[in-house]
Image (cartoon, rainbow, N blue to C red; front, side):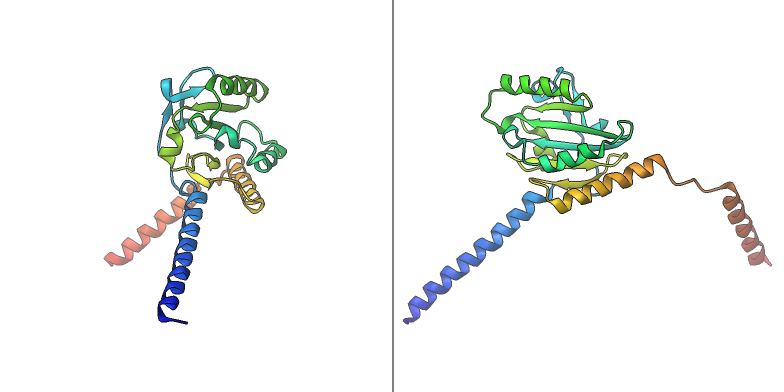
Length: 217
């Protein structure tokens, strides 16, 4: 084999390896979702940017006080996470500790807006406990860094922090993880840890006084 042929084959192998690495990195980026443990950037959908089905404004500042599951979806990918949504329905969480929001990425589909609006109005009547919101220009995807042309799921704890986030299809393992996280947060809501008792505070104050007295002697 000529030396030039060896170089050519080596170059092709390097290109394949580089492409594979790039593909893996892109795949990780697409499935990453919002950073867990942080608050998502605040945003509001109103007017030309979108809003609720009844044309009132929606703000992400509402995602507090209970556990919230938010789906940001391209209408053409509405069935991508059926397994996850069915698992959530099966839990039948009480509405005082759990809420859900469906943010519809209107810019991601070829379907006309009037047709999607009709569908959303029907869904809002059939599922009143879920808030349906139109995201006309993919503002949510851009501000939160979510994948476009996708179906993304984000879970917020009662303080508004992200505890779970996946772009694209949620795996069976992640569905179990998501349910476990929601259950744990709801348990904390229903049975919050007791505040420090006054007796403990008094004991600590007594110990501090004794330490100060010993130090001055």
